[in-house]
Amino acid sequence: MHIFNAWPKAAVVVSAMVGLAVTPLWAHEVRIEHVTVVSPERPSPLRNVSVTIKDDRIVAVGRDARLGGGSTDIEIINGKGLYLAPGLIDSHVHADLPGIEDAQEKASPAVARSMREQEPRSFLYFGFTTLVDLIGTREATDTWNALPVHPDRYFCGGAEIPGGYPPIQYLSEQNRRALNAYMIVQSGEEGSAPAGINPSVHTPEAVVGRMKADGAICVKTFYERGFGDVDEQRAPRLDTIRALVTAAHAAHIPVLIHANSTDGQEFAVAAGADVIVHGMWHWQREQEATELTPRAMRILSDVVKANIGWQPTMQVLYGLQDLFDPRYLSDPAVAHVVPPSVLEWYRSPEGQWFHDEVSSGLLPKSAVDSHDPQVRWDAARSSLSAPITRNRNATHYMAAHSGRILFGTDTPSAPTYANPPGLNGWLEMHHLVDAGLTPWQIFRAATEANAEALGLDRDIGTVQAGKLANLLLLRDDPTQTIQAYDGIFKVIVRGKVFDRQALGAEAH
Image 1 (spheres, rainbow, N blue to C red):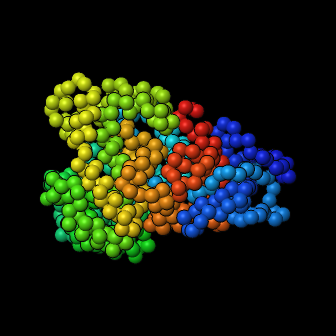
Image 2: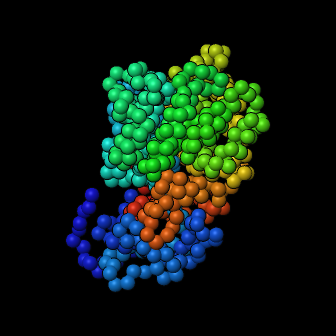
Image 3: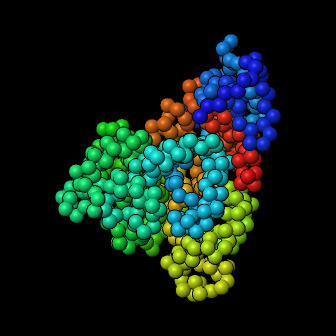
């Protein structure tokens, strides 16, 4: 969408950036002066330089990065004492609203509408300028990218097998349609294909071709038999996923696989997947252990040797646990990313629906029957302590052994309000630090490493001339402290400049 205003061509705009200040579309150039550039391809910061943006691209980075003669309207930002970094990439999100499924949206449309309007701003509030929806469609992606204020969004096609994970009863209607479009019918099982699914157009090769034509940048598939040692879901055969990987690589797109267990990650290595999209929460036949076992270490070592990307997604389990934290919805950080009316609804009996639904499966009966929120909170932490510890130890191993860690949050991982957009990534960073990652490792995982893994590195992931101007202007160096991401000064998306505080839920 382009809007043209009849402003004098020689106008020079010096940004005061008050309110939801966006670089005016009649301003062709943004110049950030006297700034320190931190970018993952650089061994050290580039200090006291200028960065020039024209339209949606960086055109110059250097001591005197000015356009010669051809520029018209200019917005100048004084970057003295500030750091310019690439915008963050969350390579694992979903289009669902946290805590709001189809039934809740029908019953409370105003609540859903308020959250839907705030959601893109909330991602930007914590610096996420690029998102990858791992069960997406072209239509939903195009709708998002047409919003007036939004991070860029890309999508993977979700390739499940009939009767496999994810179970259909937990999916929104949108996700059901998305998965049906790219469902894979395994060779030899054509006779048992679901109604409406033509096996001839649901082979790995046909599905990948359809994804590519639809604009998907990746394939997402699943290996999940059930949590822990529970076998209740069908898992795909190895030959099926190998065929999927072969077809995807021929189309020059990567394959990401949901695999949160030792069995799943062993399968992913054997199948030749490019990215494992969860940490190692479950260790089959070793569920009593929390310290790394020889088998778990061997599988993680195989992941490192194969150079497979690895998303810890640590916040997923905390997002279930935090449903029972009696203080969670009063956290000031939550108020930055969730509108007041939605927070009020989350506290209501209707908004507590997923808390109530998950209680019986997660908590012992004594805690379920208790009316004491603290008892339930303690029980939730106890119930999830072992898988959280296993994943923390696996993540520490990957960080210590130069694993190819990628930043992804799985937002929202379930219909939990404790997976709010943007804040979920900020919390993920804290868990990664606890697991032993350095701020530099997190910085690279959320920028250049993600861009490379998903074939987006020609456009994003570093601060270089020719790249899209998806950038963060920060008060602290993000290679030295993750606190930098809670001290964002400006967010820049395709050359449009936003004040951080104007993106918060309190501002709308």
